[in-house]
Amino acid sequence: MAYVDTLFNENFLEYASYVIKDRAIPHLDDGLKPVQRRILHSLFELDDGKFHKVANVVGHSMQYHPHGDASIYSALVVLANKDLFIDKQGNFGNVLTGDEASAARYIECRVTPLARRVLYRPEITEYEDSYDGRRKEPVVFPAKFPGLLVLGAEGIAVGMSTKILPHNFAEVCEAVQHALRSEPFEIYPDFPGGGFVDVSEYEDGQGKVLVRARLDTSDPKRIVIREIPFGSTTDSLIGSIENAARKNKVKIAGISDFTAESVEIEIKLPRGVYTEELVDALYAFTECENSISVNLLVIKDDKPVTMTTSEVIQYHAERLVAILTRELELERSQLLDRLHARTLERIFVEERIYKLIEEQTTAKDVVGAVLDGFVPFAKEIKRKVTEEDVERLLKIPIRRISRYDIEKARKEIEEINTRLKEIKYHLGTIVDYAIDYLGELVSDYRSAHERRTTIGDFEKVDVREAAVRNLSLRYDKKTGYLGYGVNSGKELFKVSAYDRVLVIRHSGGYSIVNAPEKLFVDKGMLSCGLADKETLGTKIFNVIYKDKKSGIPYLKRTRIEKYILDRSYEIVPDGSAVIVLTTREDVTAVVKYKKKPKVRVLEEEFDVNAYLIKGVKAGGVRLANREVSSAKFVAMKKGG
Image 1 (spheres, one colour):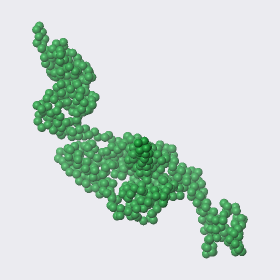
Image 2 (cartoon, helix red, strand yellow; image 1 turned 180 degrees about the horizontal axis):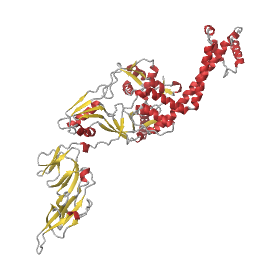
Image 3 (cartoon, one colour; image 1 turned 45 degrees about the vertical axis):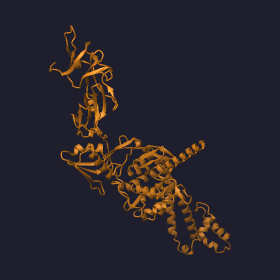
């Protein structure tokens, strides 16, 4: 058994770490999940400037991704619809309407110039073996901007999940520029569907946002939805409106979808209902308003780590400097190799060193003669001339030597030296170079990535406040049932399905419940009213009750402010019986006593306002030491 437990624990940990690192959670460095990285790697390998059938791309990606073609195809469609790294041709579905993409054999794609510009640099990319060991795939791409924040991500792993909202490309690049300058910055989400977003609780990528649709309310009898909130489609939004209408939460006459390239959902209103009355209800009861919780979880240093957007920006600012430094150093190394080769070639031809090999009889003598020929020009040559250099020079065709353009060679060498000076300057001012690099990106791609979502400040609509009170709450004294589904008895007031109701029974017990469809309360109900914020906390409950043993009357004044839904409470102490209750103001209490010998005063009147308001658990004030017969509250006389 111990062996089985150990085996289970080890296998579970391996499985959990595999799902977290290799499937569900994106990597901080390039913002990609493994399947996305493998798709882009395949596209880079296939790239010839032309579009490729998605089916072929999926097949090629299966050399790197061991989880079947379905997951690759769906991941490719999702990534392509981000409109960042993949250029698409054909029907890739519609993120606004929720329409699915065509089959893989019908649609085509290729990498965008932006992807090649900011991701592809094989010379400085770390590679590892593919799952079958036959090929190499990138561990991460050397991304030059925080693709994690631009793409956004969502994934569920074992025991953890991530939810990263997409941000605007230009704004993210500008935030990295601010970080490089050590300036303060803020970035907020930007969604492809537009709409509005309240970021007051975004908390730097670890809080939540409130998103809303953009409603055109210029016509008092018609509402047109022009933009949808993130996380919804036109189909799901229309479905939520129709569902709310069936439940009588919103009143509409009809709904039509005219969405094509942009969203256009028309809601027609019935007679007697106007636009301004329906807006809050749409936000409260439909997907026109959604709350989205955010959790920025990424893979960093082979471990899942929770970060903030500011930390991601700061990390990529430092990473960009490191990547650009490596690129410049690589280019400098390549230029120095090229300069060395061109210098040797120029001297070899211009100084006719190739003539020295005419008298040589062995290969060794030929190499030696060429090496000796370069000795007088050692000052012009920056590094040692090797036998490999000589072999390369000896392979130059006679035709090329005869047509050798000395001026062109000198000009090329001059251009190389000029570029080497530029690289030296950029390496000395690498931070400024990185800022300029991002500036060029923003300048080239801002027009294609304009902000679509408007940042606003609005409160979530309370469903209870937005609900229409169109249900008749009735109480049938004969049966003791209360509810909007009760067909007999007295109508008390109008409620909505989201209202809460305070019920005080004849026994003195009370509770606060959701407006019931049909609920047995008591055949003797003392009071029933709405338990909303505006009325419950401000109402004063005046109660006259008596002690069951002695019959002595008490007056209690209290408020009901705190409660737990559906929990029973008592408004009077144990062993007491309620005589009368009212929430009316400016009343007096009239108490009648039982007739007894030698008792002349059988009735007294008390000014209710003269007594203090106490807590709901406190006892009342004793009105007399005599047994009560009856009591009532009467309106205070004017001027009294």
